[in-house]
Length: 132
Image (spheres, one colour):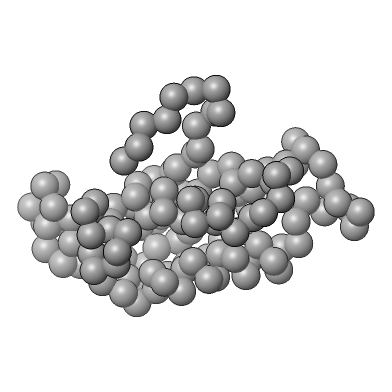
């Protein structure tokens, strides 16, 4: 199994509801996003996927989040734009962009600070998936 990881950053504001009082105030973070994709076979060039192509896909997703008030985005209208939900959103959007069945989004980690992050992994195909 091969695994590739790319990292990007974005800045945005959010307001979390029903959590610690401090976080219920609008505030911002400089998120660090780690994306890992995996697959078992390499293409004819000897790579799983071109890093440039993968970075391009991720850039398109991040552009929708960067310097925004996340609560106002359609995806987060009914859910807190928490690090957990940000990782979930990016993972599912990236999955839509990678059309190869040989490459899977393995995990997405959203770091909201140097010492706090949330990771989303797609469930095993054989397990039951709970929808948010």
